[in-house]
Length: 281
Ligand code: R5P
Image 1: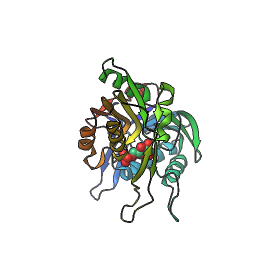
Image 2: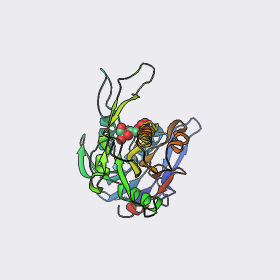
Image 3: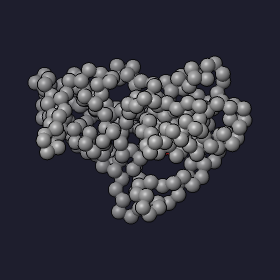
Image 4: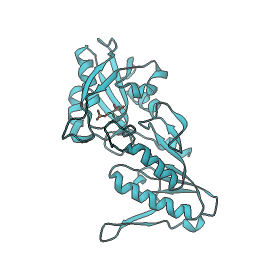
């Protein structure tokens, strides 16, 4: 059985109702809940971004209702928030990626399906904090979209960060290496980019910059700047998850020729759809 949250109605027909009580509490209704029999397999499709904390409560309420019926639950969460907080760099800091995965596992998720999860370094099946995860990738589809943009001209494939090397390595791509500074006071949870090295030879060459996500855009902007200085011809910027915070899209458009993402997060730049991959789940 498939249960689809309204926050994925652009991709699948929703059959869960989510509303608000007057005080802001979340109200969930699953009209088809009576069809869930003990042990039956249920796949829940629900986005956890934007408004991740709110969306998480919605998911926990849905999961609890299904767990009470004894369902075996697969949760499909296209973009996993908190995935970047997978390490403790400061004393007393919480590794929220661990917490989120443990929470989902304890809430009854027997398998999480997600796309280009930040703390994973390859596609496929794995277990993280006790939670079985299937990490799917949108790299093939994003590369195909760039092929169309470059209209038959050859292009080089580069990821701006070693962590996303798996997106490019099987397609002859190379990765740059990004280091971040220590935390600045006043910039909670964010570290500026200190250095980016490993720029390939790109003079007069088209380049597709491919990463798992564009958040503040600083990584891509820095990489575009380096590519431009090195004489790159046309630069296409693509990521699975396009958060595009702080109006970074305007800045990105100034330093590149094309910017797009997949629709794990809906936006006008989400030109490549995950929908075909959802069909198989
Ligand atoms: C590694 O840190 C990731 O692959 C991305 O490069 C990063 O998360 C992008 O963040 P931002 O857009 O804020 O630079």
